[in-house]
Image 1 (cartoon, rainbow, N blue to C red):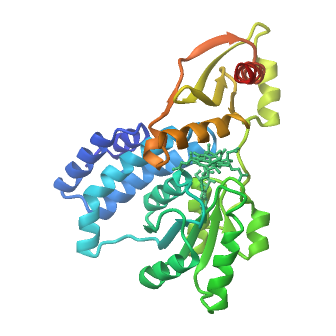
Image 2: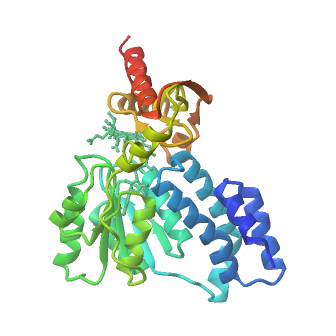
Image 3: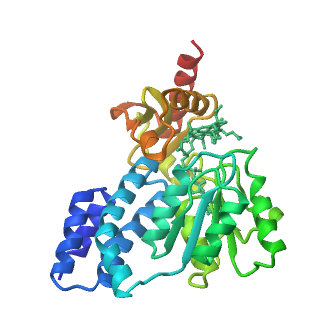
Length: 326
Ligand code: B12
C-alpha cells in the first residue's frame, strides 16, 4: 500500500519530484488512477486549501504545492484520458476578462479545481465574450469562472453573463472572483456565485455542479486576528512578549508581513503604494507572466523583536512606509 500520508505531506511541502515519483510508484504497484488521484493528490491539496483559507499557508507556498500537484497530475493525465477512468467532478472553463492581464489568482484557482477533480480549460487572460463563447461551444463547461483584478475590467463580467443569458444559454453557471469582486457585485451582475480565494472557489464550483453544500459567504482576508484568539492570547502571554517575523519581498520590495508568537499569527498585506511599486517594477522588467512574477517572491530572514504580533506588525508597517517615503 503506498504511503499516501507521506505523499500528501510531500505535496504540501511542494516537493514536486517526490510527488511525481510516488505517483509513478503507486501506479507501478497496481493502484488505480482514481485512488492515486484522490488519496495521494487531491487529499494533499485539500489540506493545502484549508490551510490557505486559514492563513497558515500563503500564496507562494500554495503555488509551490500546486506545482507539485501538477507534477503528479502530469503522470496520471494520459491514463485518465485514455482509460476513460476520469473521475471528473465537473467541467470548468476559466479566463481573465478583457483588458486584464492578471493571472496568478486564476491559475491558482485552476490548479485547486483540478486538484478537486474538475476538468479545467483555462483560456488565459484578456478574454472577450466572443472567446468565452467559442470556448464554451467547444468545451461545454458546467461552470464558467471569470477573474478580474481591476475595477476598470470587472464590469466586463456583466457583459459576458448578459451575453450568454441573451442567447438563452442559461444552463451554464457563472462564478466570479478577483481582488475587487464581492458577493454584492456577483448578485448585481447576475453571476451564480463569488469566491474570495482558491479554496472558496472550489467549494463554490462543487456547489454549482451539485456536489457540495452551499458555501458560507466568504469574505476577503486581511489581518488575521479573531477577537476570541486575541483575548485568549492576551491572558496567556508573558509581559515581556517577543514575536518572530518575516517579510515577503518581491525582489527587494516588501509585499507582506507575517508576525507570530506561540499564541497567534498576524499577516498584513501591505497597502498602497507598495503593490503599485511592485506592479510598476514588474512591468518595467517584464516579469508579468504568472510564473516569472512568482519567481521573484521570497521570504526575508526570520527575525525576533519585543512586542505582541499585532504591535510588531504595526511597527514594521510604519517603518517600511517611512523607508518608502524617503
Ligand atoms: C501581481 C500584480 C500585477 C502583475 C500581474 C502578474 C500576473 N501575471 O498576474 C502585473 C505587474 C502585470 C500587474 C499589472 C497591473 N496592475 Co496589478 N497587481 C498585482 C498585485 C500586486 C497582486 C495580484 C495577485 O496576483 N494577487 C495574488 C492572487 C493569488 O490573488 P487574487 O488575484 O486576488 O486571486 C485570488 C482571489 O481573488 C480568487 N480569485 C481570483 N480569480 C478568481 C476567479 C474565480 C472564478 C473565483 C471563484 C475566485 C477567484 O482566488 C484567488 C486565489 O486565492 C495586485 C495587488 C492586490 N492586492 O491584489 C495589483 C493590482 C491588482 N494591480 C493594479 C494595477 C492598477 C495594475 C496596472 C494597471 C498597473 C499599471 N499602472 O500598469 C497593471 C494592469 C495590467 C492589466 N491590464 O491587467 C491595482 C488595481 C487597482 C484597481 N482598483 O483597479 C492593484 C490592486 C494594485 C494597487 N493597489 O494599486 N499587476
